[in-house]
Image (spheres, rainbow, N blue to C red):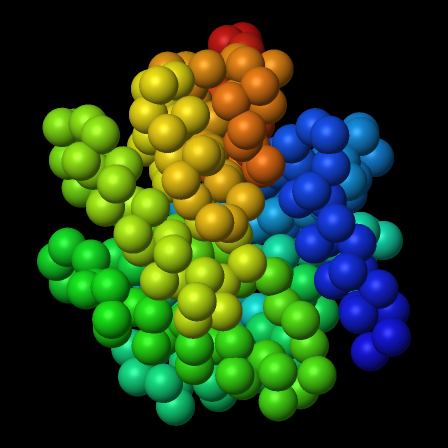
Length: 254
């Protein structure tokens, strides 16, 4: 457990450096090994990529037992902090979340992504409900003496294309409530407007995580705006599968 604690502390520190923490998301032990060997300071899984690699859809369609077995192989393969994309925690109630997070910690995680969309339902949880869910995860981790990095993802910017200052203010309100409940960072996938990102970074009390995409500002610009963490989500898997598809196509053209 001491090695895990050391990695957790190192992972927290990576969110307070001079440059953002870059997470080029992995989906299995092989991809994690390649990413680790090419400049990574930490490894993060992406639920979409992990599901796709196993022939499943995103949204907790892949059984938790398989997610954790895959995650354990990643942890055993690389000597870096590894954080799990835990989606909605595979449970809605506090007891279910506590039981699941115990397994995640046992698997060697230093942190999780934990989202506020209602997996299998519609929209996002109200602030009070999601804050209660975050507190359940934090309490379960603390009972095991673990300072798990909880990256609280809000799906507000994925629910609509009408991104404006009011929506950013709503995200900041969630970040404040989530932080008070025990979150360590806030993830705002879908937010790409520079002015709104700057507003989010200035107002949120937690390190801000941005999802990289073709529409997102360049990493250097995001760093200047105050972003602490850059995630690549399904991008690396799509790059790899595109290259594989091209190679397979060429091999079969005989």
